[in-house]
Image (tube, rainbow, N blue to C red):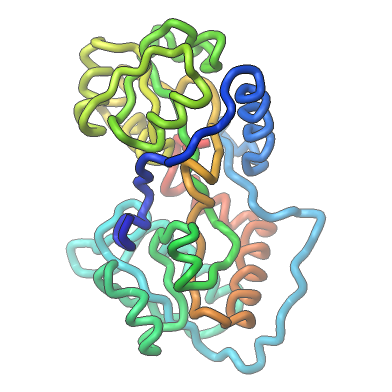
Length: 296
């Protein structure tokens, strides 16, 4: 997968794992590794990646007077351009909050996604906040803060069955729609082996089949599903079924703020700022602003 694919769409994972009872045990263990959520007003779970019992030590900021973030402008709701050209989105607001927390001057400039790493290495910016997925490929080129969100997989279903559980036993012999040749299809094959998988060529076709009632349950990326379920089309027919599924082997380690390789001081500073924003509730406010339904 090329760097542009380091956005959130994961493809088929190669290799085999043990199925059966051991596979189910692994599945249960993975669910325990999910980010610990906080229940916000309205019942929305906000992910927590920072241990409130362990405060990150404040780094020496005396040499840091400004921070230049680079992003792109065509990936709503994370980062996008308004009609007047102003940058907006979850990543944009988070970058601004980081600079306010650090009490330093902040600039945020947009570049084409495929040019971001070169721009960083050419010293056109100090950090990339552009929904860059943390994986072995990107780790070879960049260093990252800890993840500030992950990409859980979720089941969505018609409202008539959305309250039912989504576990291997309850879906045994049932048909579940999934995007063909995706990491989500591979995950179903591994951990829901007795489920009948019905592949579709695109997310659009998958959701249309659900709306039409051709199937009653689908499996896919929790973020895109949450945005769709919060739209007029989605909220009138469907809802999440069951909870999130977290597995870095299939769905990645999440997204982090990227810096140049070896820039330990800036990476430590970003981790400190993110932890402080979480402790103050700022992160939760931004998450609820852009993901009112939540994707966990």
